[in-house]
Amino acid sequence: MIFLVVLALVIAAGAMYQRIGAARDTRRFPAPGSMIDLGHHRLHAEIKGSGSTAVVFEAGVAATSLSWSLVQDEIAKSGQTIAYDRAGLGWSDSAESCNLEAILADLRALLDRAQIASPRIVVGHSFGGLIALAYAARYPQEVAGLVLVDPAGASEWAHPTQALQATRAHGIFLSRVGELLAYLGVVRFALNLAARGSGAVPRLIARASSGKSGAAFTERMLGEIRKLPKQAWKGVQLHWSTPKCFRTSALSLAALPPIAAAVLRETEKIEAPTIVLSAGNSSPAQRADHERLARTVRHGRLQIVEDSGHWILLDRADVVVRAIRELLG
Image 1 (cartoon, helix red, strand yellow):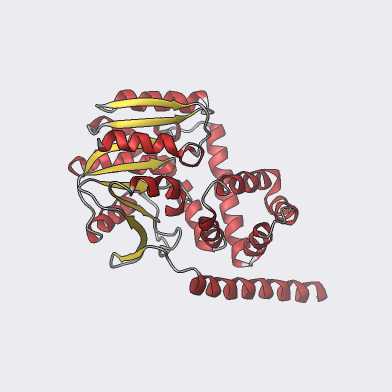
Image 2: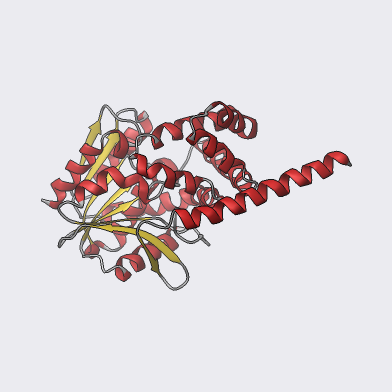
């Protein structure tokens, strides 16, 4: 009985810690860009630069507009750019669904409300590459070119192997665990310690809640975040402290196979010039998918970025910038 009372008090204290911290974050770190009202919800968009051809940035599965900081700032020197947070991520309102139709409807409504020049060059990373391909296939008049940064493999995920299915299921599980821990303030507590330079306790929490794979994922993501400009670190910490980020990650992973299948059916329709940037450490299956994609679109080219991992936009932002400028030219 005493144990249950103590447990209830700990849970209540954690939930209160999370609620107070989230309210403080809202006051101290407002959205850096514009909150665009789509009617049913609002999306956050960072719009920089000006020009007759706009560059639209589509982030990875649980990433936000902040992931494009290094690339967007360079491109904005000579053209209009927009990086946004999909529903349920970053500063945007929560997502009701993460299916392809909802994502594309949000994207088009956002670009229309924000009065972004058309046609556009669309730059997509990982999961965002699938969204960029679907957008180009369905609305060719709105797309002038594509830069796909280590895109998720459409043929890989449309017909996933048992190993990939297990990977996706584990990712959904970790996201659900993360959502619960975020509600209880555990994620916020761990990230606050990590921000102050204490890595041992956050790693211990990740391992205790999600096992070795959870700890490895946490360590890997912290490494990627450190490649961003320091002014972006607090925003990333804020986003990963909220339950909605983990919930949207789980919804996106659940929607991945049907989205990939839709993209696989429609890739041949794409006529816009397309540059596929493939990470140097891509697996044979991923590389084969990138090669297939570059061959299938009407005007495709594959570029292997040897000295980069999956996050080419952080490892070799200069390569991504050159590819975009090539299409702008």
